[in-house]
Length: 189
Image: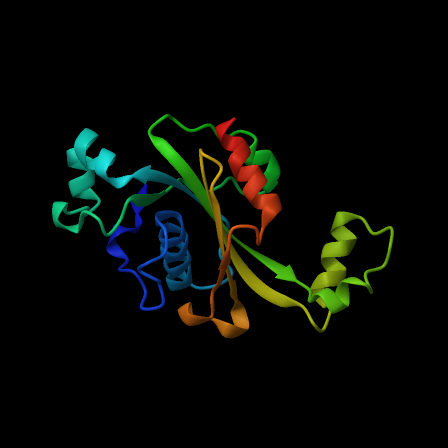
């Protein structure tokens, strides 16, 4: 397990943003620091104050100093690497969180097409054929999606284009990646 505590908030992270947005952007910045062409990563989101109180040794080990109270209310903790060759939806169907985890997040890289190209998608393609068609499309965009959800249903997403790989170019919003948000929320069912 690794905490994001050693990654300072990026200059582009809005300090007025809510805790879930800040955690989502913190994870996005962490993933950006690792570079592109990486496997999906899963994170537990824990309440920082609760972690300090219930697990002071772990909080110290993660570098969660007492003097940063108020700056961070959610601490992302990276989980073990996802099993290779396992479909994301299959893997997420096996995830269950203890009560101390208030939310979770995931980063995943994908290819996307602009809406104008969606009308040209051939009908009747299998998932594998569709993936191959998108990968060969001249208007495809490589993106990193970071999606975070809380037990209470709150959601946040950050989308970073590979061609505009800058923390000031990250798009955020609660409904940008609804399918992945639903799959992550289901891990709390």
